[in-house]
Length: 174
Ligand code: IMP
Ligand code: MG
Image (cartoon, rainbow, N blue to C red; front, side, top):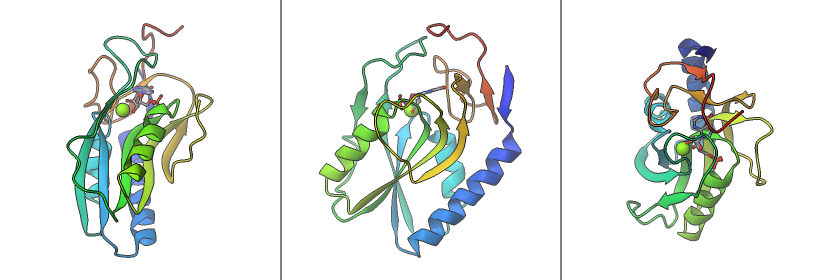
């Protein structure tokens, strides 16, 4: 496996993102919503750098089923969320690939009455987006490769790696 982004670079960038978010939020409480399972490590590191009053909630979205790396049917589970009316939401996910997942989740959070919904992704994959969607905070732009580590998985493995690595031969991709 080839390391694309080492752990120290991720840590440095996460601190920068947290500073930017805190600056723009100006002390107002923020309602963090993480998209499981990929957000896990990014979210944990990000919130510990965020100097703001905040709450953390989690939703589940999965578009990759089993051992394939091509997007499948999107499954969303938002039933764990409390009332969002008037909340300033920051949605946190690991990676923006086609954009299907985040654009649907954002629509749903707005529909539920959030005052604002901003989006933070650790990674944005270039040349893959299928829907028009601009995240507010992006850690790194990466080339179109299948990556794992720092929360990102292949068939539910490799999430614990402290760096982002390119998986050489995932099935389902040439
Ligand atoms: P999207 O709906 O196509 O943007 O897909 C978003 C989800 O697909 C992410 O939250 C990830 O869980 C997963 N995903 C997309 N690309 C990768 C990758 O390179 N490695 C691991 N998971 C990925
Ligand atoms: Mg995900």
